[in-house]
Length: 451
Image (cartoon, rainbow, N blue to C red):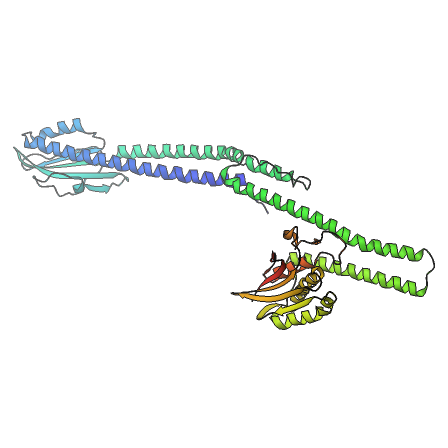
């Protein structure tokens, strides 16, 4: 499907705006000129009528008025008629237009624009007329003055043509010059695109100075810089994850390889082969759990885990988990203290998995003959489930929920370092969060979920 370029779209928009602006300005100026010309014609007609009336009142004979009239007006578009009681009627009309019957103004009424009679002639010309009475030595005289706006029509027509030509020239000039200006203005986008196109995985960690950008593109530049930083963080995390994963898988594979090579170096008894197979199965089960946990974390990161939520009584569920892990705790003479109330809507299997990881982690790293506290607290529509165990403060507490990270920072303890990552992922799937704090000599791990 054809998609016009941004330059073409902006050119069309700019040209349309220019056309509307030129048309609007021309129309406004045309109407202003037309009203000004109409006003001037009206004032000219009124002043001439008042002058002719004054001449009669000053003693001029009606037959002498045409002489004054010929000097004051353009006989090609002005009309004069004089009707006296005892004199012959006088008419000066070279326009070919017949005057309509008008009611004259009385002698003492001054002429105004409201008293003008306006009409359109047969040849589509605007015309206006004024009739008034005046006193003269020959008696009462009726004077009728009229003007056909032929000169005004010619002037307005010429103005219309010139306005159209000027507007068309301005529109064409705008259409021709705007693509050049728009392309020049869009160069910043091209430079910004070039910077982003040259960004590789080896350059993410290096700050890349952005080219000078106009104010409208600054949010885009800042967003791209933020994206680069996020990509750098994610790429570093992915690289570290791949390294840790390779290390975790390499250890059991080396164990399997070494055990099998030693076993095959000489003939073994049936019991020895059976022991070897049991060791292989144990290592393979560990690998299977590791892969399963990694796949779960990957699905959880993309919210691709289907939840089967149900209402769970916290005390009953946690009591079941405590009873299940109590034999493990007894090996280190650790006491599990439970204090839980209320309910929560969760996927019961995933919730038990998260709490099992927290309890197992607490038992593994607690000193012998200590007490692990499991408790709940309610805060509005949220529930906090915490597991607290004694121990020394961690050097890097902000990393407790990172994959493959372990507090002792060595590889000699059991586990793969994914337990707390699973806890955080399960909490996020339920719209909550996992948290950690160290207070009063206690490691406090918790889940904050909606009630």
